[in-house]
Length: 497
Image (cartoon, rainbow, N blue to C red; front, side, top):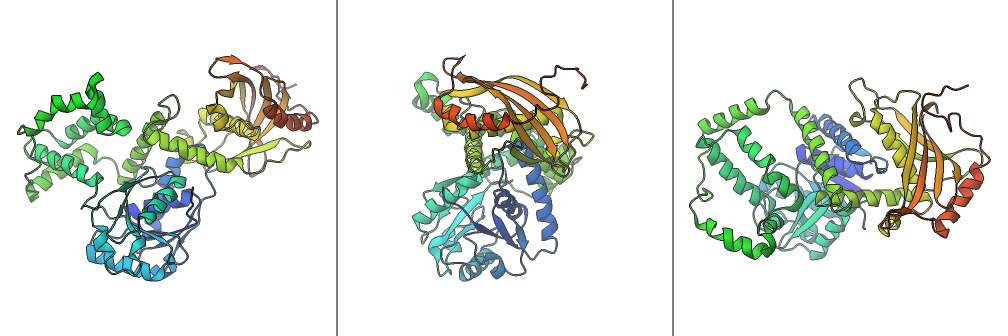
């Protein structure tokens, strides 16, 4: 996959700030230009929410966070960038002027994406000297979590640019979809506009209030859409006969006088006040940052559930998350791990973020197990038991774990893990893992684990292949010279003598 090396964001509001977070958390240095006097504070708050969300989203090793630099001019921000994302307010003349300035200051081969929700790219690229590299990259809020970007070219946009943009989004966990023809509002907002317009009529006519309308969406078709979208959902509704039967059965409904899509509701002061009051009653007790955190946590949960679908291969945005994690693990797997007879393997570095702590500010119990599990995964990748190996039908399964909690990990604390191989044979790996305070090296928790090599399809233990055993051998030989760790072999409740 191609890579974005340096990014620039022009405009740092709700969308622009979230683009900054998406790039930075993918390890990309980002330069930002936004004349708003509080741009740094706003983007800092967005970054904090994004880091919290990523702490819940994945334990795959994210690259070191990209450096975010705030520039005093647009020209300074875009200099040297290979992806420039414009996210200024939605006014044609303003956007056109900003994009023309970006075009004049940017590298000739830099990609320029606009976050517009509906302006036509042909109109945006009118005054540019290099209009072929301008396209719409329309994201969805929050950009750092929702992975879709609609890629729309104008009359002068090169198809190769759109393909290149799509390829460059994949390594940062995003799904670029190329829209074949430019239309106002593109695809996503066209669909949202239809639902929004009907919703306004339902509120105006007192059919329901805002909370009831939202409940109808989130407890029904919203859940189906999250995994399968519209047409695949309706295919299932057609039963064994599929989509043709669905269209034959429900197609006539389109001629019934249900919808008000062709009528525009009068969004007058009375209706605005009505909707605002109902919205305040529904959500007004919570501040915007709290609502954002709740939204992010819910989105993470949905994506985790979808990642487990299709027998672990993932479905919808869950499959995209699984692919993104595989990409991150593959990058991490290239890092060299030193095998030494003087110390255990150092396999994982982590930091306790807000998503990991409980009410007293300490890391919750299941996060310790998560760190131990991720450390054992790192060992498996080291010996060649990676995603491809598991897909082929073999793996190591954990059959026993003994955890000791010796200290407390607290919010913001840097940690690392070490692993000592105690013994191994053709089927088994027996190892001892420690979680350390990165500042002092003190041991916070330990886990002793046994893993067994299995044939996943046959559902039984089998010998590991020769190439895996050959990678285990030098680790076993080196670690045989290490002293037995304190606490190894101990049963629950035993005290150290």
